[in-house]
Image 1: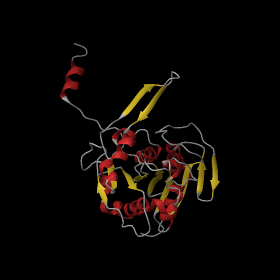
Image 2: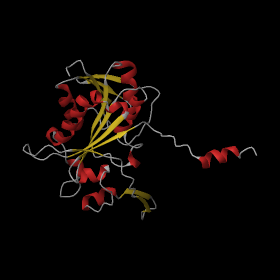
Image 3: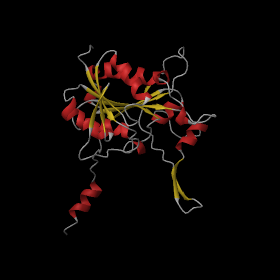
Length: 266
């Protein structure tokens, strides 16, 4: 593969984020990369779409006053319509489990690409909780993203020719945070999104209702019922999770609903 291979690179943390820079530098070594990314943080906006967006030229490409899904559409329709692949990330924070697929801006950018029939990879970094330092202050160096960039560039180089995107429309990649330079490359495991769900809600003393995702606490303690083969189990055990997915939503036709429809006018 040479630099004729072209990539639209986007994310949801914003074009100035460390994870975005890490992926840009890694892909720029072998591909023609055009950044089309949000000007600021657009985390957890899902596939929210704007009617119009402002575009500003950036040293890496273009900064968009909009969402990750906006970036994919604007990029593929106007700014770099002939790219070979869309890569979204690297998100600071994992995107694990079936329940996050519709929430994540990172994943949503990849999903949007699937409707253009352009292969896509969503890339996220698992930042382990715990310790004296808040997770939001971790992963502030490009080197922390090494497992993510290694896996993402490997997949981008090899997955199309291997026929991966004849079956999957996009890959959801989650990688562990890298340690020192001498740390061995984290292995890749092909996974399915976990079905575990642990959202809670309760009243605060001030009358507000607080929503809380207990998954992260359970990941920190290792208290996870997720079986082998799921994305969350793989990442907690130090492997790169790669889930091959299709754009929503899969139709499952069945006799019970067919019979109900037939009875509607009877």
